Image (cartoon, rainbow, N blue to C red; front, side, top):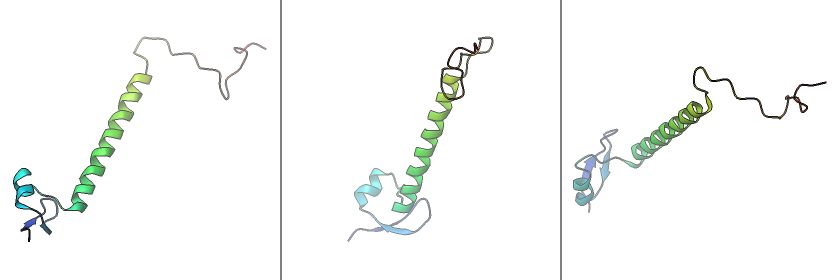
Length: 81
């Protein structure tokens, strides 16, 4: 039987191997805390990716804005009657 350790996130007693405990240097997490940590990491990565894309799309100060592409709501003939 594996020994019981306290989860570093919530304190619940969890069964883990001594080898795992030593590999994690005593910072073992229950599956719930591990899932929560992974979800937070993924959200942070998505937010960072969105910020990076927003920086790429914004023109530098002093540069003229990019022309609109022909699409919905944009005139097809360049604005001429």
